[in-house]
Amino acid sequence: MTEKFDPQKIISIIDSKSADIETLDDDIMMEVVGVAMALDKLRESLALVETHIDGREFEKASRVGYQEVAHNFVYVQRTLAGLQTATYQKESLISTIAQEANTTYEDVAPYVEKKMQSAVKKLAVPAKIDESNSLPART
Image (cartoon, rainbow, N blue to C red; front, side, top):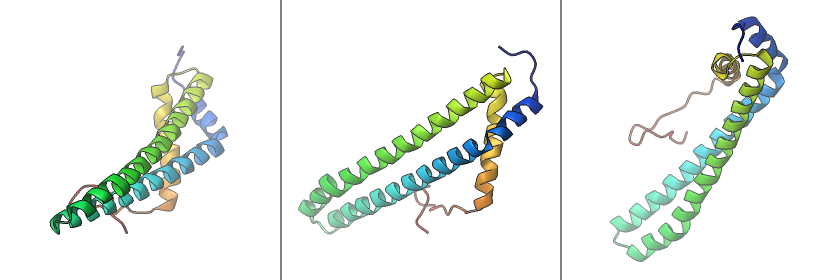
């Protein structure tokens, strides 16, 4: 499949697809935001279960567990499915570019990642980490 690795050809193709890459980058960022929101809701419902257990309110804890925790867990799964779909779209785009450049996926992927990271850097939104559970905290 590969003749000779030509970075300029890859860069040229990526530049011609920069609108697609930026749209895909935006989609991935939006999916990440959705996952973060879903995780926040799940944390809130788990905290409520813990509060009820600590207060020895076992029926309330059970109700919250079966309703809110279950609902929010499904919410997390659905948002993760959206993120997975966006990731597959990125992989497909990389494969298409590799085919056009007559090179391998591995040769193209770093260039696409760099282009996508430049879109992320435009936003420059720092993530705040909650040290207690290593998941992004509410800001």
